[in-house]
Length: 313
Length: 249
Ligand SMILES: Cc1cc2nc3c(=O)[nH]c(=O)nc-3n(C[C@H](O)[C@H](O)[C@H](O)COP(=O)(O)OP(=O)(O)OC[C@H]3O[C@@H](n4cnc5c(N)ncnc54)[C@H](O)[C@@H]3O)c2cc1C
Image (cartoon, rainbow over all chains, first blue to last red; front, side, top):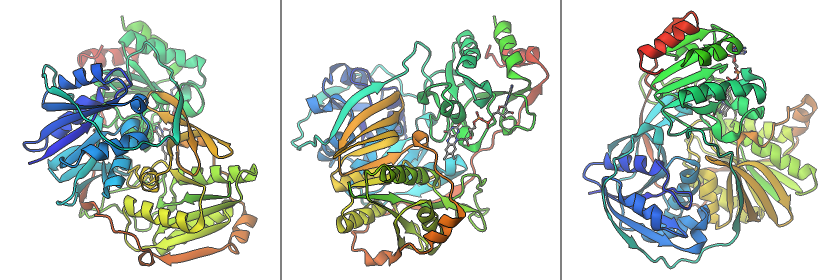
């Protein structure tokens, strides 16, 4: 029988929505028992949230001042010290999970399965390679612990309403001080979150300036959508890095994705493969984005976008 | 700081449209253009800039891969690296073993900073840097978009999901780099000539006394579900109607 430990991502006070999706992945392993571990300086509210997730049988907490901010070299040895009873340790394939999980794997002397998108059985998984141009079915050694990150766009959140028990655990490991958090510069806005929003309006290089991106924001506001961008738009400084969609940005699965002035490079498309409906507005009818768009409009965005915003009342 | 080690992986060039082989046994790599993993090229560029500012004295490039990876190492030497190490293996090597090989070189040559790409664009694993930091017991700064060397410390800006995070790390350390860190230089012809005279050490993988890691087996490959080309609308009114039709507006 499988016993899965899920490492809970959080921001110090709130559980990250990715956790409910990692639990969903874990729950797709036959008859798995699922526990969640919260490492924080103040575990209270975060653990409460985790305990509400369906399928979770127990929430374990490690409360230490060193866990105030997520530092891989600090978190990994604590996870390693308490995971010997588990067959699997899973984390999200977010920057949080990508930072810490390979450290856990290396300390345990195993390789990691990155970006799990489907569970075939307890030791066989599907994962994307080459920016999603191929899907590999991989098998981990039967006799060793499985360390994995979960591609969160591949899973729907488990329901809430559970009330799992919460227990604190002590891990007696010495923690390094060689890595120090200085600051977080976040473009935090009131707009819907890119990773969880049902609708996303994204702009590309064609916008031409930070000011012109206002067109994207206006349309997004009208639709109640989050804002995304191509790498070219981020590189040019029109928008902050956290809104980049694609292989090296965010992998998202909204119901509606509107790509405006984005050519549709493979590295961009890999971020929207699971979107419900893709709409493309581009002035070049040959743009590769039209090959994957459900609805395409060949038009100059500087005319079409204001007109669309106006028409959506 | 003395020495910087940079990993260069030989991968299918990012402009190639890769295809899964018809029999599902792998990805078609016959006759396709191979290049340095783009993230690794950025790591090398950063190492060279650090050296050119007088903050390091030697840049060493290393590749674990087939004999043909010499080409990528020569390109690295032409960009400005001082010497190269090829750890030769005809078959792919798993990330933990690569990390263990890097660790052996670190212990042998006394490395102060390791710069790696944040992921390789073939397997997209994003593991090697983190694994190396863990087994070395040294700091890691992943997904770097800015690196400021400050004597025996570095201040690194990281691209994380919620924005930009700044951390301070003690050296020696491992940094994995993201795309916005810099724009790699172009190699000039005279540099290619000069690079031919720079040392390139070739060592067989089995000369390394590393513990072998249980590898994850790749059983089969399949192409992703194709998205179908949808409908084209003629104007904004048509677009609005199509959205309403799907209940999306
Ligand atoms: C290793 C690697 C990783 C990468 N990761 C990512 C990633 O995560 N995300 C990502 O997005 N990219 C990524 N890229 C970059 C990617 O290859 C493309 O360069 C990028 O997506 C292009 O952005 P774009 O579509 O905005 O720009 P362009 O390709 O320049 O496209 C602009 C489009 O706008 C159209 N246009 C111009 N003017 C107008 C107008 N007035 N009205 C309407 N349309 C107009 C043009 O026809 C064109 O199709 C990566 C690249 C590499 C090498």
